[in-house]
Length: 401
Image (cartoon, rainbow, N blue to C red; front, side):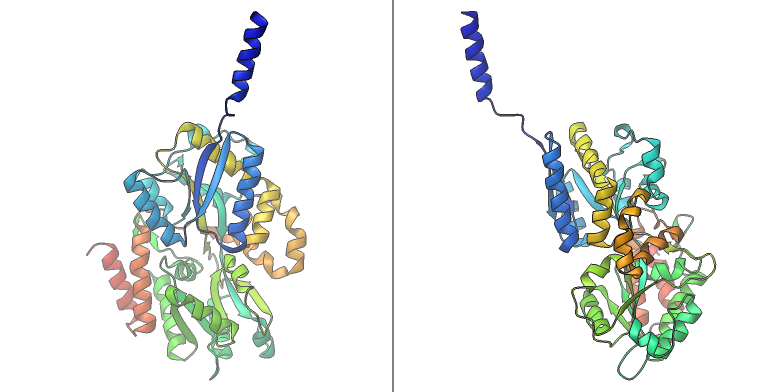
């Protein structure tokens, strides 16, 4: 009787479904090869970790994803994991929508020492960790190598050299430089930090600084001399086409734009150089941090962190760099990338820039301030508003005056 009971009980238990994987929805803004690789990473992780199932969802550009997240937070239906652009990240923390991860993180010292400090440090806010590095970029200067060589020019290393090169490359058919006024003013920020300046000071906007005025004055001078093509982000495709069609000879952009650029057919050799700098100049980090959103259970949080640890395996970091051209965030991934960098030495430019990289401002309001600045830049470069006046207007708006 006892054996029969155990046999029946065993048969009954065998009919029960296996424990379901805990679903972890992950919203991101990566398309193209990088987006496809995220899907691959999730499949591999799901096969390796029976407790969790990561479901990646492409939510559009950073701004589109942010709008969708804000709506989801209002209805109480956010994902577990979100790729937060680094100027949006402080706002999530300030509004209490990002979970502090310190209680869940027990990372060994060798792992921490292996992370590049600028990328790792950005996830800390007031001594607590809310963000995890994933995609980290730096701005670089793309240029038409053939055009520079034909005029005996070298890629500019300082802003004085940049002015000279931009003017020398200008002709009736082409502009020396294409500048894009992005909504977060990241590229203009690079022109400021590379001079040793900053867009914030003591927690407040710093748009009227000497360095900001010098940067905008240079752009306006190039415009007045016919050497500048100014575009806003809505016109970024036109900026790319102008560069590809040799209507513009230099353009500043994220190194992560390189895979998209490679989809075009170039009639020239594409060159990549560091952003010009003055002594002590830096470049602002770009990219995003991964955050676990409020409402996630302890089990979901642990699953999200396990997925991040999988992304951080050196082999996966190297795969990510090759698909996306973002900067590697772990030092141990560098030897795995030697062949990739050897294929085209220009690929090392962004990686080397991390030595002079600094975090973007962490003020929660900065993303709003930056939009005011971007609007002021467009007025100055496309509407002829004097540089000082445009920057003062952006400063007043940011200060709420």
